[in-house]
Image (cartoon, rainbow, N blue to C red; front, side, top):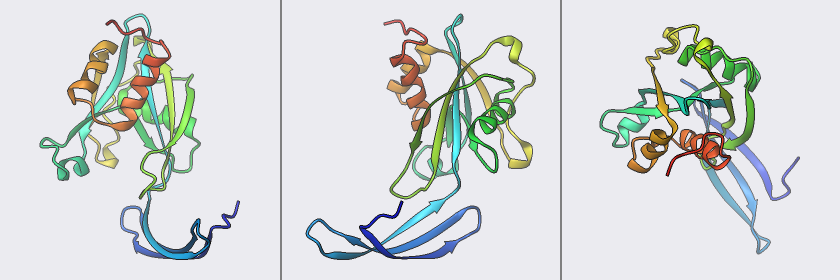
Length: 197
């Protein structure tokens, strides 16, 4: 659907090295009826998916830990980040993608996932929509060690945590990843794994 408040949209590719960074220049119709020339940069890395695996009996969740250079550059001394399993969609749909990523990163082969919502994670500068999923897991679903795809230079540590501990790690600052916090709070709010007070 065309936005009647935007006209004369022009894009210029600034970088196409890893993903695509574009400069977008346009005129925007303000509330006072005047048109204002604006310019923004938008980073397009495609859309993604993320998942939180949980076990109701043991009251545990599966998270990952890996080095993230943007966090290191922005003051995270170790550069390590605790996260929910995630990946880019490529040509696959979100459900197929997250099942593949789950096996690659965590070693668990899951067949049933529940989509809970879609989110723009950083709409001021990144075009990406992330599809959020949850799924139950059990030890019988473990088919490998996980750790990520070597051809993608991934070196991922798999973590199994009690839900109470994971929630505490948000408050302590040990978990700072937005998508992970959203997923942990979702299962807490829904009472999927009751958290002890």
